[in-house]
Image (cartoon, rainbow over all chains, first blue to last red; front, side):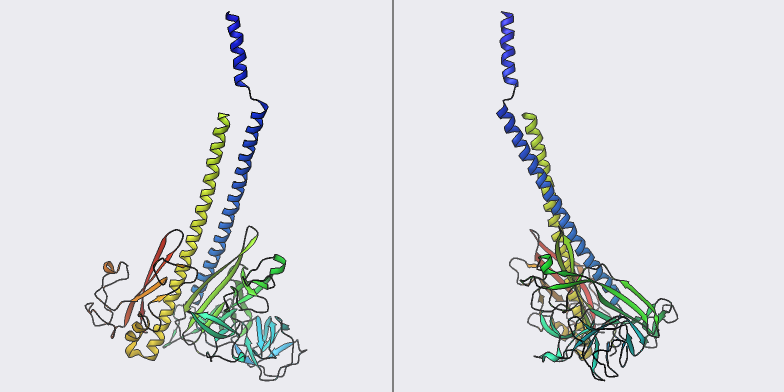
Length: 351
Length: 166
């Protein structure tokens, strides 16, 4: 009897403890689904976090750059506009140098616009000065313009400068390069606004007294020269790479097409001694993440119908508007961020 | 089977926790960006007011305070409100930013709810007892306030500063 009971009990126990093949399959399938879902969600979460951190990094960089500019321009003043005139005829084939009335407020490298806002407009890049009247290492016909003949006396501008046009009430096309939105009001302006040429108070003796009677000593701190009244400073945009919407299959400026090409570059600060071209310091103001549309620097970057110059300075109000459009990557997709600020340059300009 | 169910539950809790943390991170990032936009907008507006104060002082130094307060009062040339691109207007409000130029020397920081250093002699007469210095002020306190609907809540920041007649 005892034996029988044991045997029955053992049989019953064996039936209870085992799994059928179907049960095992269902369990395994469920486990696999849960595991795959978990892996998928963790991956998605990782991507999401990575994307959020990337976006934050770009925004932080943008903010840091704004603070650097605020610090840089706190005491700055425009002492002379980087505008001049040709002092000799220039043939379309001339590539040796460009002679102008004065190179004084022009940075040691950059882009010149000859006969701006006319049918003969030409952009010429230069890499240094020969003296106070000559740009050398020039490249003609830049940024979608063609080399052409220019007469003695033709106006020359540094393309970095952007200031409001004198005429704001329906000006003719020859009076403006773009329209920016300033404090809710459209403002016609001249120039590309990719830079800013300025001076700061200095003590030529190397001390802390920048006063000169009721005025200030104006200049810049230049390596080898130190604080000097012959010093000058400028911020300029230097393109490094390009972003082609068609190649990247991404509408970067949100204008509804993928046809635009953008220069991605860096804002750099250059300080130089106007009496000695070899004394110069050129340093980056941040990473190479600044966006400008190719052949249309200072143009609209957010499809709001208004242009977005990096720097727009109004001599009448002394307000300098800094708009930075920056590009970063998030999950291998570009992200664009815009940061802007306005600075009231308290020191009086001298134009 | 029970062990498997427990393991799956723990796994699910972990996954939900990770997702929730990611969502929170995203929310904080957006909130931080909104605050940055707001702070930049306040700084820019303050600079614009300084610039306007300077031009008014240049054009008409005798009526500096009167003209400046008129420009930035309701119905004035600029008005007492402004918008900020990138922020959403709070429900029930017509604008994101508001500005207030104070012309009462006797106001206190406690009454204003902001530490700006009031009461203070604004017209240079040696006391801080005048309740209306809009015609005679040499310096004026300005309060800028932004209020917007951000990540699931209303956010507000205020900035105070002084403009001088240069």
